[in-house]
Amino acid sequence: MKVLNTKLSHVFLHGLGVFLVAILLVGIAPTASAAKKMNVDQLEKFIASNKDKGDHNLAGKLYDMELTEQLSEARLASNLASLPGTESRDALTAIADLAAFQTVPKVDQISDAAPDAAAASAIYKSGQLYVSKLLPSLPDFFATRVITRYQATPPYQPRPQDTMIYELLHKVGVSSVTVLYKGGHEIIDAATATKPGNDTETRGVSTGSEYGEILSSVLTEAAQGSVKWDHWEMISGNKAAVFVYTVPQPVSHYVVNEPWIGHATTITPAYHGSIAIRPTDGAILRFTMIADMDKKELVMQQNLMVQYADTTIGSKQYFLPSKSVMLVVVHVQHEGLLDAQGQNWVVAMNQTIGPGQTHMNDIRFSDYH
Image (cartoon, rainbow, N blue to C red):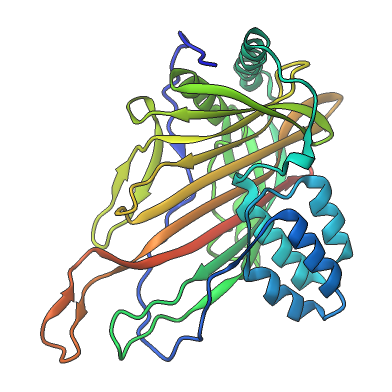
């Protein structure tokens, strides 16, 4: 299905702030192996047979896994409840977040008949209409935003005598701030942002886009690319029509910032993803954006997922963000690397080398008032 003749919104889409990564030429890196790929069924069997092995031990094993399918809300909640402690629950949350851009297994999809082309088009257009009415209807409100930051550094050895410090995916820090949404803008409360214990790398992070403006651009730009109904799924207790879309580069406003050493550049790549729409009223339940990055760029990957849920403010119901995942994978960047004799540059200034380093934020919204 292709939806045409929709007015383009010129809202710029801002993703996660990109991290500048330097090679650490110290020590000996631990031996590393590729993450173990598992589907959801294999993961659940592993958890069932290992949940008595201890919280810390199980967490380490989970962090070393990569899911090839999305873990549905119901399955995630059930598996979290069965884990022995906070470390393993953090680890399962992290690998589920990384898989948020995959598709749920067929067994977790609703087997109802697919809508015909006209019905699918009508559902998509109801989503566009819903979003066009969303921003003007939102009141000013407060919310609590909790960000949990995860990071992973792959093994890399630029020279025989040098090694980069290798770390599995792991939790780095947590921050909790109060956010005010007023007049269409997001404002972070400075007092809560700077309170002791907040992770300094995340307490001021803001996309300013979860509440609606990004949805307008995604739905409009997707309609100028291609949109196709994919499957039915239960999200936040609602039956959802899940569409997959692609946005070509000429109409993209998805901005990726690349802070090269000494200067910064921005690019607007093509992107693709999915949009889940409640067919009864067009409410957006979830969307994903995956930038189509050239692997030669400093930023190898930049993804965003936002999920929405029924929220009461005052006496009225709104669909507002409940969870977001922001994922960035960047090449290692180095100012320059000398050869073993310290005489000749073997890596030039601003060159990317080695595999990517993963940075991921798990973002939760609550206490709307």
